[in-house]
Image 1: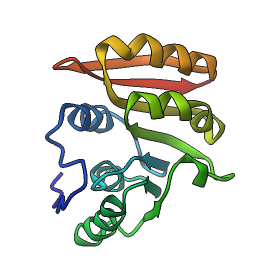
Image 2: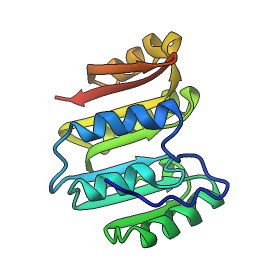
Image 3: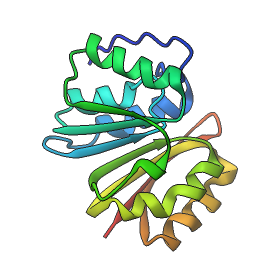
Image 4: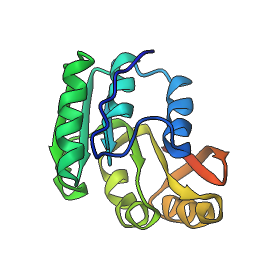
Length: 168
């Protein structure tokens, strides 16, 4: 898949370990017809890949103005017309639900928001989290389990981790 990314000042060109780990995991998933949430979307690279992989509806959220504007522009450039973009944090998540949540954010934000992600995840849905080091995996997994999310898999690259959890 070819994506044109204009990074401006936003995170997420695909070169950082956390983004590339998320991409590896996404490429091995069936996304056709799925509703996807990309929290901390940065440039929108994960949202756009989800779109190209057949997701029917994607919501991309970031707290940063550059990321918000960049995701809008990159989605337009890549003709990903099924991506809605919002500026803010997990407090924007209302009663919408998702089949897949992608959260490539700092450890402390993940720990704070994991319960909210669980609340908007459909039964059987998956949460993929990255943005933390291998030494933080136990803390992240503990918080996920407390939120009734079951660990499925994780990948490590240069001490960075992406971990997959499922709501059963």
